[in-house]
Image (cartoon, rainbow over all chains, first blue to last red; front, side):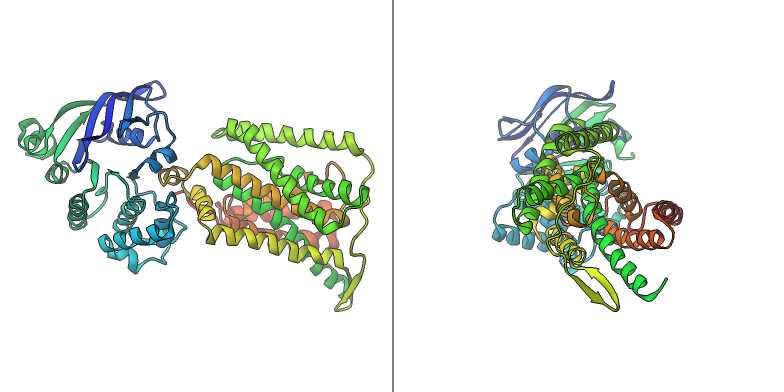
Length: 236
Length: 289
């Protein structure tokens, strides 16, 4: 079943289009990845899904409802959460408070506690450091916090924007394992990555963005063996 | 400076710090949450004092009740200003500044037309007694301002740190986009910040009314100091605004007692420059994440 469908959107910064006529779909239970070089429009696309950018044309629908005219907070309450590029944790709030903010839309504190426990299972370090100010965490820990925060409302679709950016290869591997674990619990994930190798290993399907347009799409296994992709993104 | 004057000046400094804090904290909160500066904030303070003038001095309603009404009324004014000005000028600091500076003048003129420009209003002091502290005579009304301000600023601090909505306000002040991604409505939080700021300023004005010259222009001097306090405290930092209020309360009051109020204002600006040279982001300034 189609959970999210991005239909032919164009997004402009001023008069410069960052994304032109991009269409993609995410089905329930999938990991879909969006890969491409820096400045190809990956972040712009994912920001548009969350409502942080507004497409000048085209539309985005989630569970059959048009969301491309909604504000970001509305979209979040529909069940799309995002771990944004650069982590964007609240630096002067504790780890615990950051996670509470992820559950801002929840009305019941029992649900908050339950989700907090689930997040602590995936990221034990967040439990150990629950009193520490988020701004004083290491980059890897901040990334885990940003993902944990996005999980706190028990979303239907998780958007991950460059989760391994700036992380060591070891941490990236750890993170990949967590993403796989989350997927196994049934979570649908849209993953934006510059690390194409990792992304295509995790994903069921992928889209390749080049200068604001989608140039290739297909099952991740096909993309992995595609010669162009190997040359351009997989270093061989 | 003899001993009683010294004690008297200390007491006055504490009173001034309390007033600055309850005004500057609201300004800092709004700046943090909306990234907009409300230049009519001093007139919010003035309106609080006029609520006391009209309802207490003219109509004879009991003072504590009127103080409460002043906070509620000016909180409502804050909401109206958010809905009519900041909602439309969001993201454009200059437009918000011009519009609220204009609003400040309009409020001064309206109040002046209704109740007169020139003479300051006398408001009967509900607590005319004085107490003797270490040889200095200090009015009870002045002393009441201190616990009043501590209570209101303390309640705000508690709200910001221990309630879900209050934490949401802090999240907005730290990263608006990230807050929106959590389902926090940045627009609603801006409105709430304006209501809280209005309530604090109105409350402060109402507390000060019996011991302050009540005129349409009384907000002007206060807001200038409050802005200096907020800049020194680190713009969006509520804690910084409190610390800077205490600093300026003492510096300004002592300078005004030893020299005069013009020199005190000059020294205040010098202190601001020194702080900003040493710590460009203010005492508790925060680097944008």
